[in-house]
Every structure is written in structure tokens, then in C-alpha cells.
Image (cartoon, rainbow, N blue to C red; front, side, top):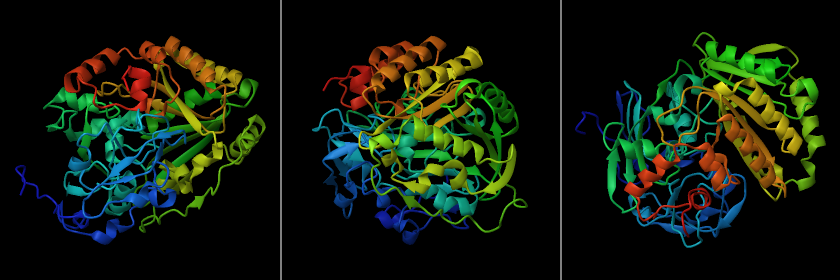
Length: 503
């Protein structure tokens, strides 16, 4: 029995993971429930890159795996991981922790091939779950995919989810992920109650919003640079069904889109949109606005959604296949297939939250050179003109692509480096070309002028001087690093590029 009166789940071996039962406090061993865990790893070899799954440990012993590590953008560096189920063991002396490798750029890549990388994805036990309050505590390697698989049929869902479910709890905290409900629920960190962290000096501490609060809020959105996240305690959301009531609307241009997005945010808890950044002239930024809420029992099937059928992109597409003509053709098709101006339907959570997860290896579509995603948030005060100016510059620079997503963001959270601020978020995928650095530089200059900022989890090309210019909170974060890691033992390829860490 814990001091707070809750019973902890058994912790002997991987079979001790806990899955929901009818009890108020969930406990017990359900090995089969997690035996084929859905993390994207089984379909991708190593979800991080390069077949790390083959080196998995046995009986809690760590093993080395992979000789090259990649972000989701498929731009890699030499390096290897230490895999294991005991996070306290494998993080000792490690330079960084790494989950499922879905950060697009270099934020989970080692700065040097010799840096020890602790792979957390096998440490995925649920330590306790209180069905009355929705409070869960779990190891940092537990993925949202597994949480959804086990808990959606039982009426619970993570309070915030990004656009992929192949994210670990540790990664969700380190990136302070946000989703379609940011204007209502904020980021993931707003729902975290406690963290267990291994510091750079190998000490292990517990922190909460009240205890070691500076460490807590520095870790939320801190990209793993203040400590290794070992355990996460957070509050799940109770849901009325396992289905989403969704409304979609075809919108003619970016100005109309921003007005529609603002109206939808007042009516719906979840909103986002796909926009066509290749459409010329007055139709620039046309797109499809999507809004949703959890369906009621009366609106949905009593049968839980089946796992989605997945398809695989079996090989890299050649670089020449993704060009302005093919991208424009795709955008036309996607826009006009929405025959009705407005449509309503009940869909699965996977279809609403994670449409790209249904295509395994979809990141191969951008060819052997890989891709990056540029994501920024432009403050509300900058107005619609800033959003239109961003799209116009994107087209002018040749950086537009078929995948461009726009979202409404609510107030800034408490994480020291958390990404969202009240305003409009724009995310665009770009194949890596010789012009990518020039495109990112120019977009960053516009974002700085507008008072916005970029999302570190997606970034690979921002220069240190641009990041400092857009991030007035950087000095505060660096002061926290000086306090908790004065020797800079924790580092990543991104922290070397942006924060001046030495190799």
C-alpha cells in the first residue's frame, strides 16, 4: 500500500505491467495485453532507425543496438542505443534518453557517436491507475499507442495527444506535446502531476509543480536536457465512448479559414485544418477545416473501434516524384474530394487524431534525402496578415508541400520552453534539398519579426542566432541547466547546434 492510499501494481519483470480491471484501483498482471505492443517498432524494425529491435535485452539486462540513429525525418547520425527494461540502470551515465524516435530533427540524436543513448521504449509498465480519478503512473517508455489500446475500451483517453500515437510518455513530457484541443486543454504538461527524474549527476529525484518546481517546469518541454525522465504521473480524461463526432468544412482561402477556425474553436473542443499552400492567387490557403468532440453513447456504436488496417510504403520514393506539379495535383484531389461544403460523421479516434499512423513508413515518401517539418506559431497579435505573409513567403521560396496543417493555439503554458502561445500554428513538411537551409532561414526571419517561435521537436535547420532572437525564455532555461547540469553532461545534436553545447 502506498502512502497516499493507492495500491501499486506489481513490479516483478515485464509481465507485471498493469492493465485495467473492474476495481477502483487497477492492479494485476496481464501479460497478453502488452505482448504485441503497438509502438510502430514491429513494423519499422527500430522505431528510432536502423533495426534496433534485434538487440533487445532479456531479463532486465541492457544491450547495445544500431550503428546509426535517425529522427523521423530520416536524417541520421552515427550512434548506438542501450536498450533495457530498467531505466534506472540504463540511464546511468547516459547523455540522452530516446523513446520512439518520432521527433523529426536532431533533438533525440547524439552529439557524438560515443555518447551513451538510453533507449526507453522497453520500459513501459503501468505502475498504477486509479479508475475513480483517472490518475496513472507509468514508466517513461510507455507509448500512447498502448495506452489507447488498453484504455479506450474502458472509457479513458490521454488528456492531450499529438498527431501520432507512437510517442512515449517521456517524449510527450520532454516535448510538452500539444494537440487539436490546445485551445481547451493546453499541452500535455498541464496534466502531469509528478515526474521521477535521473539528474545529470546520476541522483534520482521526484518533482511536482510544488516540489522542485523549477526542475519540473524546466523538464516539461525541456527536450530532455535537465534530466532523464524515468516515470510520469498524469491524469487521464474520461470519455463517453470510443468514437469521435467529426464535422468537416471546405474553406475557400486563408482569410476565410482563419475566421472559420476562430468560430470553430468557440464551439468545438478539438479543431485543426489542412491547407493548400500551393493554390495560386486569391485561393491561397484554401483547405479543409476539421472539428470534433467525443461522441455520446447514443451517437456511436457500442462496439469499440477495431484496430485500423495498416498499409506500408515499402520503399523510398525517388526524389523527383515529389515536385510542385505532383504536390499541386494531390492538393487539388484532396480539396475537391470533399464534395459537400460541410459534412458530419462518426469516426474512430485513429482516423481523427492519427491519420498518417495508418501508413507505415510514410516518411519514405520524401525520398532518400529525407525531410524536415517546419512548425511555427504566430501570435494572435500579429493578426491574419502574418499568416498570409508566411504562406506567401513559403510559396515564393519553393518550400510548399502537400502536407500543411494549421491549428488554433490557446494561452502559453508553464513549461519554460514549451512551444505553443496564443495564436496560429502552421506546420509544413519539406523534402530536404540544397535550398532547405535558405528556406528555413527566411521563414525564421519572418517568424521573428512577427514575434513567434518554432517547435524544437520538429526542427533540424534553425540557426542558434535565430533561435535566440525568437526565444526570450532561453536565458531562464540556460540558468536552469547551470543549476541542474552545470557540467553539461546531458546533450543532444540539437543542443550543440542551438545552445552552444560542446562535443
